[in-house]
Image 1 (cartoon, rainbow, N blue to C red):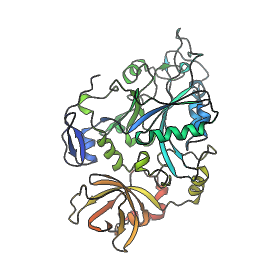
Image 2 (cartoon, rainbow, N blue to C red):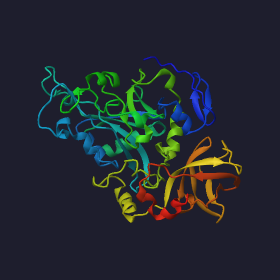
Image 3 (tube, one colour):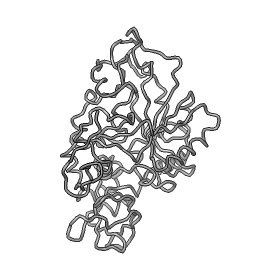
Image 4 (cartoon, one colour):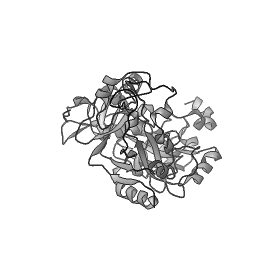
Length: 408
């Protein structure tokens, strides 16, 4: 598939490729919904490969999520005891996870993928699951490219005698995202199959679909493991454009960043400050990054204690920056700026990410989501801050402030 890009016309605040060198601003999430589904190559992410018999055990002791799921075979997950040849297997979906410091602060995030294995496919005769005695167990992960070397060094320090190879394969593979439009509303498992290839043990024959959605590397589109509203994600060989990416819908990564920010989701070790961020304040539980049943991992004690305390008073929220007249403001706010409740004069949190007139900030919910609150930037009283509660938030996060929400 040719790597060409055509223009997409939008208003202010988002960026869309008009050619290989210039960008045009875009306005807001609504523009992306009308234009989508779009696809972006995520240059901010790199790809790491874990390979070896101790891969699952090694990552299980480090990461916040339950990596043991990747150790299951298609047969173990299949509820039927009968082998059903010429039917597609459901490959393990990707997993979002984080690596924390021993003090429970965020360090790095990873999206883990298990490529298709021989046992997930038909054998040469088509009569049952295949096998490859020389096949090594492996997982891939897309990670923040800006801290790749740090992450690799950290992982290798923890490896000790574990039989696992950790390799940067960012030149061979790239991470992509599909999002916007009515993608999550109209797509189904058939349109976006979670199966990577023809296999055994499922109930629908998706042979043709597998050919159109994946390739012989076992790479394909998966539902984003964090939220349905984020669309689909996958890693693909760097020398191809993934399937289902229309030439006039391939657009700059900044559009994906805006889409994600407006949905209240931070990503990477800059937006989620490395060594400082408290995972639960950055909503990693709601993003399916933390398992409370898996047992011990690095930083687990702090996370469990914070969780069982029951109340998270500060959380990451999507923000909009406007003037006193309601006009959207761009390039007047910097990450790290303090947000102030102008009525009380108290600081209620800080801006963490700025994308045009949109952003993210970790704010005290009680003040941030009151209708009566008038939020401004410290020493920039002409900048008003509007905070919103994302639609995907679980109701229990907001129970203490139900009365305030009722009048918003």
